[in-house]
Length: 79
Image 1: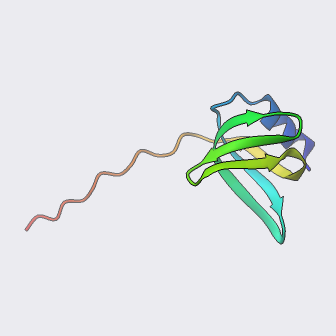
Image 2: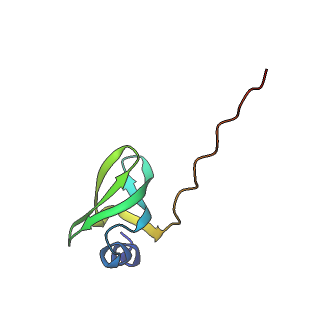
Image 3: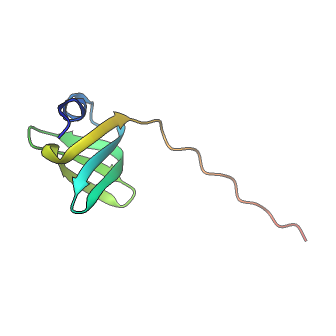
């Protein structure tokens, strides 16, 4: 666990867009989304795929990230 990363998540305001890197079996994975809640043992991040609960002990790194880019306009095919 990275104490600094866990502290960042605990101190961040709910609704902050974050990336949290955590240990999983066989390596690490990232959760990118909006921080929904955090307590002494875990945080919850809302990603595109749904809510992800992350044990603070599994956090390797975390930081705030900017909002996602705006959707690109559709291309028109003119005949």
